[in-house]
Length: 140
Image (cartoon, rainbow, N blue to C red; front, side):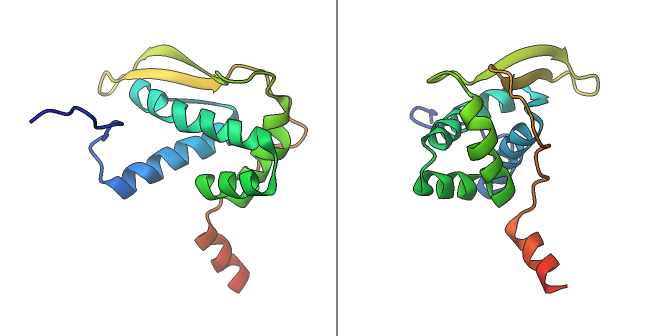
């Protein structure tokens, strides 16, 4: 059997776990503007993150709702649309991946993924809270 036509890396995880991992990495990238992860994970989040930034640059109600849904956080979605996207000065190629060497424990190749354009932060990015956590806090 061959893998022709299958997109994406599996990372040794089930589908839901993999989607949660990528969503968490994208949230961390929006929040901190730069993260260090394995090279494979950095390459895997580049494509959906660039699509998300392009969507955020449109700044319509529909695009805002899609960004919030894909990030899973109202605060980070709004931060991406209102603060980060207007400061991006290019049409594509928003992210840069720099290889940083190998991890000590398992010798995995590490990389740093960051925005190409410098993002000036007026207010710090909000911490990512999923909708279930917010619902629990509101009940209390």
